[in-house]
Length: 293
Image 1: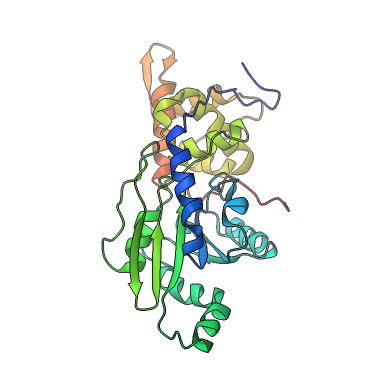
Image 2: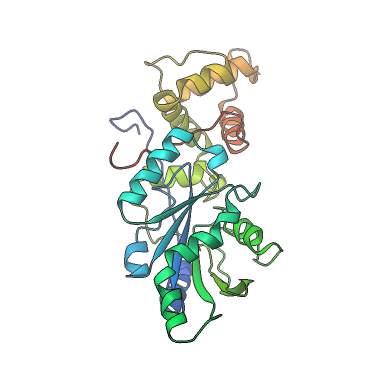
């Protein structure tokens, strides 16, 4: 079934019973921390946010980490930064994999909590560590980020969507402790688009979805947002009248993914498209614009 906007409707199901326990654990431990740090995927800042974050964090000071900026469109990252700052949130841009920006984390936390530090000092509690809760969806790079900040393998890596692990306190230095939490999604997606964005960026495993439909819809997004990426990578100018499957087929022709005479393997092409996006071979692409756009 095709939606009015040309995108194919997908049956995206999510069974997050295990996430309820993780969310409850987060709520129970908020009183123990001074601030909340939320790690987002800079390519999909909206879809990688937990919509319950405002309620969960309450009035705790918050720092938003835009991670994987090396894979995101720099101009769009600047727009997202401006948007979050307009919401009163502190922002830090990082690429945890390479370590870019990670060294600025501890100073950013201390700036965020300067009043708390002053209050500790006034009470003679010099040296009392600041405590920060780290939140993020699965596969957003949270464990890699924490390990970079800590300078050692401290966080349990390999978040899997659907697998909950317990909390973990990690000492960064004499004045900063992090509370690592399970990667959590939310009970239901606001829209098909959110589910697709999470699947395209591997936050939820694309193998539980129809890869061909996911690839077709991704092709439509690329044609809308970054048509040059299609032209440069797959060597054709995307026809504005083609649907997503036809765009996939055209790319498959260019790659020589022939199944039989006149028939091309669009499933293989969909897998190739998604894999090359994950590897950054399509360029630095951001798939969502901030609300002020």
